[in-house]
Image (cartoon, rainbow, N blue to C red; front, side, top):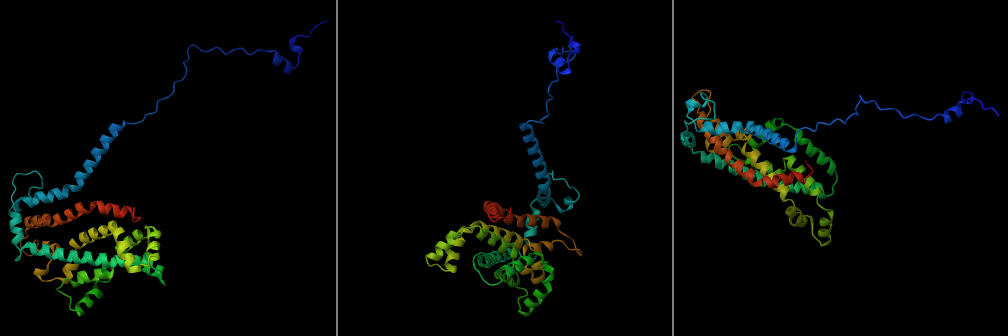
Length: 316
């Protein structure tokens, strides 16, 4: 019996009878090593760089304030001649001269600003909280439309209503008084604070109000005993912002207050700079530092409530 050579077999059979030879490794080639990814600096280095950047930005931001304080301690002749904050020629003469250089003591201007600020705070807290409770919890016809109109007044420039308001206050005989600066606050004219409190009241659980209604409490009692105690962050935020905005207001007191005895701090500071006579920049800088002290104290005391008020009203 004769056997056919292997070449005579079909291709499939030939492939099965052929054994695969192992591939010999090339001794000149090495296996590829995985590349190391650059992960950047370590966490400690990143922390140091971050803090250095924040410190540098903080110095840039507070440099004008530092320059103001240092300039208030310089003589007038050296304020703009030497702009550096490093100097040894310091004096308190600007503070003593600025306190008594405007016919009346500067304490009168501080008192006028404080009275107007307290009146504005009381007006905003009473009127804005009542309006916010009405928009948040009462159901009446046209509530959404009125709320939208109220929000639209935020975009209305103050100068649009300046002339009509001035005519109304002049006819009422309120010029040369603080009434034009305080009375409108009792009418919930600051829509921003109304919106702030509405958002806060809406975030409160409805079960509290329903439980009070079941116990027989009316809206006035619910507002006074349930809502107000829970609105402390929003109330503190409103009070702080009202104080800051009222204390630094220049346009309103300039229009309605023309007697020096009724001037506020912002208007009184303008009296140190006169285009027709000699300007006392040193006294102006000194009294500017004095006027900033109440703002710093109010902000430091109410900082915790300010942050909490924004965090709990949906404005993030």
